[in-house]
Image (cartoon, rainbow, N blue to C red; front, side, top):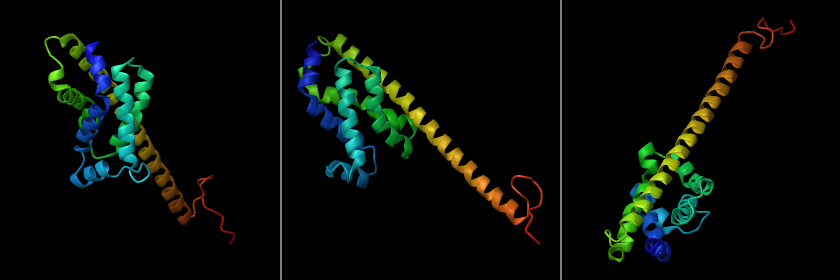
Length: 180
């Protein structure tokens, strides 16, 4: 339980460093913008990342409510699923938390003394990563469905225009009566 107390004490430091490590996954110009622009309306991506990781961290440190974790992951994963990230790159931010915790807590944790607590923490982080991957796949499937429906809709419009241009009625399959 000593580790949990430290994690709660160092929450803001961990979140700050975790946020910084996440935005470094973006191209230089984008990462600078995400870091500097604090207005949630001018920087909705940065705001969503900050909000999501705060909730994710709180769940990892406490109850690990799966429903709450899914909700917290939703904001950041929806964004990363439509950006130019592979699946592994999109969810890697979860694993970065392991390194961040070790950096922030540094010499305040003795790996031998707290090995059981560290193993539990890393197991929790792994569970979150699996949930993140599931969420990523849901988002990608939905995106594929939307794109497929849009292609289908455009194809139907195109075929309708071609049929009308050729004098074929959409409903009858025969020539269109043009009144002559």
